[in-house]
Length: 564
Image 1: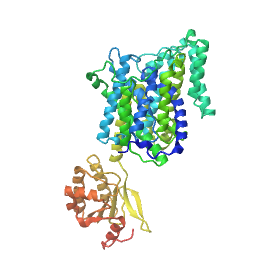
Image 2 (image 1 turned 135 degrees about the vertical axis):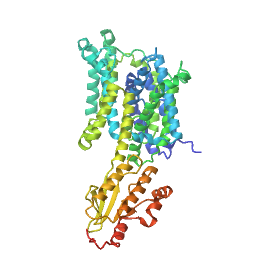
Image 3 (image 1 turned 180 degrees about the vertical axis):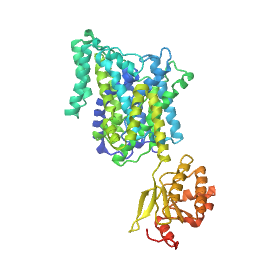
Image 4 (image 1 turned 90 degrees about the vertical axis):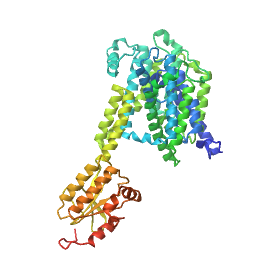
């Protein structure tokens, strides 16, 4: 048995220095970032650090991706917070021990769902969130995240109620702005943006945290009304089941865990796949699900919240020329050392600094270029993205997840229900030509080769038949041959098989021969099982378009010319 984790197999000594340097750089970015995510998740600051210690270790040991960085993530943190808020259980409020216990329980249930997904090979679930829906979802999360930080940036208490009520609260409370808090918040944003623009090799968030925490300590900002983080309980992550939780609490977090589960598979699979393809590595999404399940279980058993594959941190790792999970293990080791010995340095850090970091994270999630591309190329998908985004920040993140799945499935059904259909002809060189399948179109005088670009099933079978009949009945010349091009039809359910048999009878009632062109062996086996192939006849099957055209020309109708 090979005990070396898959992402570390075939390791080269030349990669070591790069991996260590990439891990050190990544930890500098990750530490302030994951601390900021705790303000979204509603958990103590140290729990953000916990998300990249044992969860990162477990993914490195069990996953397949060489680069995917696992840890706290803004989208899953927002889903978690929305779900726990919706529980409405007394005592389960952001920042409370019970809140953290339920957050850890959600991670455990999410880990169990991921194990189930691996056993059932459900890695394909991530493919059911289309790119346009993901753009809209993450944009909505970004708007929710950044708008949620505005009160902390201004030093104003957060409002109650829905998203619009919360925005109205801070807008009508501008007279209560705490100027010192605003100064620290704006300074954080400015410092990060300056380094991002002019010195991208240096993590601006780290500079902002170190510099502004030092300023805060020097001027005793807390004494001037600036809210600070205060003492941060560091030390080794707690090991064990969440305290105060019973089996009866598990069903309460299942809906939230399901939402996180879908998002984790979709986001992590897309990230892992894109970076694997970039470097020519193999992709094993089901193996990554094993790693993600281990990471989620580790999160739940070490006193923290749900983790996810991070596109931004993975991009940073790639930019730093990291090659394997050793870079992530280096990051985890640095964070562990920081958690054990240096969290006391955070006591004077203004909360507005964390708010500024998270505010910019929210801004980065708003995919303006992606929305612009959708607007220019697929306006209907742009509308879907906008609807998803509005639902996420105005109604709720969980509702946005549900809508995203529903819209993606509806789009899939729509594409299958209304695919392209064509009448195929031939040019003078014998190459196929494709014309829209409209009444009046024909391939040759007396011949209609009809192509339907989707699998046939109960929902689109009648529409397929209607289009088919409209082309046949309106052909300029009496139709003698009807050919169905099956190149895009891999499968056909029983309802569609009955419809196809009826079309064969319809064609013969109009004195036309019905043939199949380019069917694969699986489709023929299915039609044979339905008995539809007996209706069509084995001699009415042609493996290529060219053979079908030749056969038609060899069977002339003396009433019609053979050129077309």
